[in-house]
Image 1 (cartoon, one colour):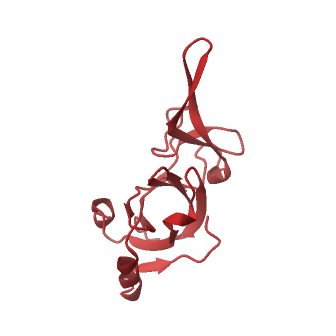
Image 2 (cartoon, helix red, strand yellow):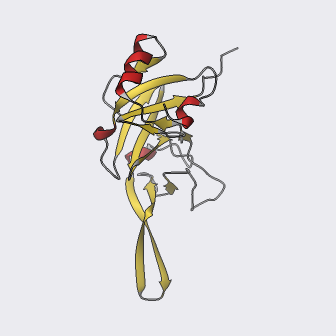
Length: 165
């Protein structure tokens, strides 16, 4: 298990949402885990997750298009930076950095990230058998969440929901 996955908050539950091969580079898989819709993105060899709720007006953020940063160092020279990718909310096109959740339309707004990682199949099977992890039923559908990878499984790590009083 990776360092980030093993350092999950106390009371957190694991949700097995699919194989790493289920998400293409630049793609998104939307899952429901812990009662929340979460978009799991693959950017190169890394995985990132966001709550599927735009902080601007609550739209389905993860249904938006994934776009690459475009910049111009000098007039007439337009370039793309494939290391920086954003999801554009389908309601108003507000863009949020997939890795951090940061908005560049309004620097005070941030999409919520969610921890996600990849673990070895044997570790996942043991966690399910021991009741330490749950399988999420499809279809697979983000709050920004920390992401980790191991072997070929994506693992989300969520804080326990506050209890109702």
